[in-house]
Image 1 (cartoon, rainbow, N blue to C red):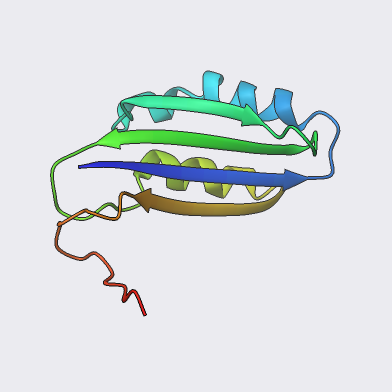
Image 2: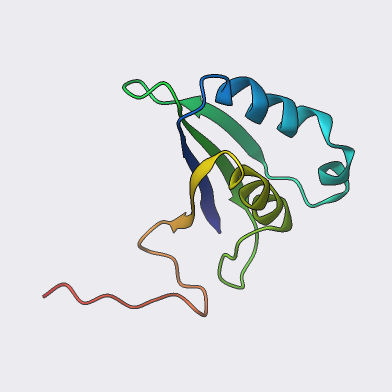
Length: 104
């Protein structure tokens, strides 16, 4: 199943991009954690201190859960501002644990 883990930071610091990039590249502990199939570091097109990290995962069921890597990064980003840490999946996911939604 393919799913995306998104960690978004809203900060007031001017050098946030450099700090996030350095943290992601420098800390050796995260290299021993399970790694996503793809990771993307994005800077907001409208708010220059908003940064979003997207981890793309392709893992068999069970349902998606926040990764150790994502939890570690989100915890450390809280020092820099407001953090949102969410999971996204396709609507047609048939894995156990998914939340059913009605179309009404």
